Length: 157
Image (cartoon, rainbow, N blue to C red; front, side, top):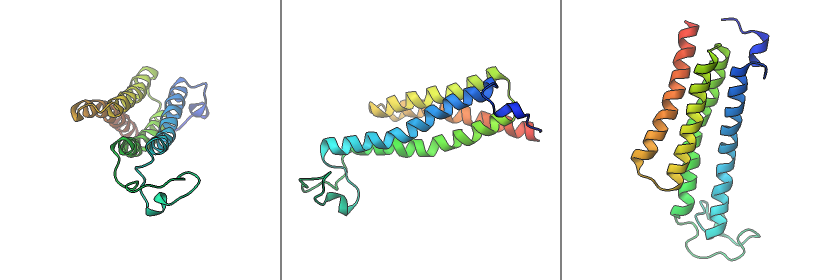
């Protein structure tokens, strides 16, 4: 399947859709650790490594228990791990999807479904919703990526 020179141009609305969505997801992936750090600083705990509990400019008054699991901090850490499990697959599948030349409407539906589902998953996780709610959101994002990969496979065969 030959790729036209304009495929990877912002003049291509499918690529533009992907670029916007991928940028949002990369920002989400990179901001979540900062949320974790903010939470660690707020509670003065939830640190992971023994050296983190030593006196330093960022930890001027170490206290017993700073290395214990702190649910407030750990929730953000788990959200980041979930992003690390999901977003790279979207970035790869989405890029291959763009290269396969899908119809614009299909691309917009699948790409924005992924982004919306991940945003809903973030809200559900941040507000401690039941696993069922998080799983519902995750499922939509996963199905969108699977659909993109299947489309690419079908075009390549």
